Every structure is written in structure tokens, then in C-alpha cells.
Amino acid sequence: MTVFEMIKKLATDRGVSVSKVASDLGFSENLFYRWKTSEPKARDLEKVAKYFDVNVDYLLGRTVNPNPLETEDDNIPPEFFAIQRKSKMLSQKEQQRLLKIMEATFDDLENGDFEEDEDDDL
Image (cartoon, rainbow, N blue to C red; front, side, top):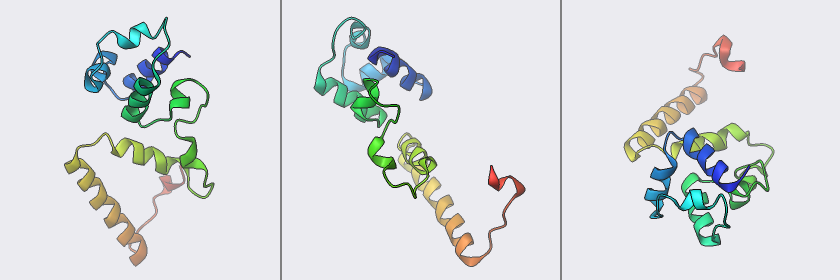
């Protein structure tokens, strides 16, 4: 997968256009399309990686893990990192709401008030 294809996939996964990503980063709308035939600059790749919260090596196709350093601890399931990445796309108000929901869930678990559903093992 080329850098352009990876950016297009990440943009699609997040529900934004490639042009919007370029605009958000202060790039020309055609920059990513030019990367189909030319090499991107390192500083531009770093900006794109930061925008999508992935590793530059992931953009370059050198790894299939978008954040290899995050999963070094085998005791932490990758789903927790997915939640972390997705929460960064929320507004501050939405992040606060999510935090309250999580805190209430942890309080219920600590107090023994949490009932497991049959679907919890999915």
C-alpha cells in the first residue's frame, strides 16, 4: 500500500476526505496525490502521522501496527488503545461525557453493582 493509499484509508476510516486532511494540515489539496509519484518530506509525514495518531512507519507500510510502542505491555488489550485513539476525535464536551460514563462504570464495578450481561464475553 502506498503512502497515498494509507492516508486515503485512514481518512475514509475517520469519515473525512483526503482534501479535508490536507486542508486541516495546511497543505495544498493536491499534495497527497503528488505523493503517488514522489517522495514525501519527513516533516510532512510526521504531521500526517500526528493528525491520524499513528506511527510514521505505519504510513510508510513498514508495520501493520499503527502505534507499535503502545502495545509493548502484553497485559493491556489493544482495544484500550483503540478507545484512546478514537476518543481523540471527540470534542472536549464529548470526551468529558465519555469520562463520566467510564468513571460511573468503574464505580459500579468497585461497589459490586455491575451486572454482567450474557454478551459481555464477546
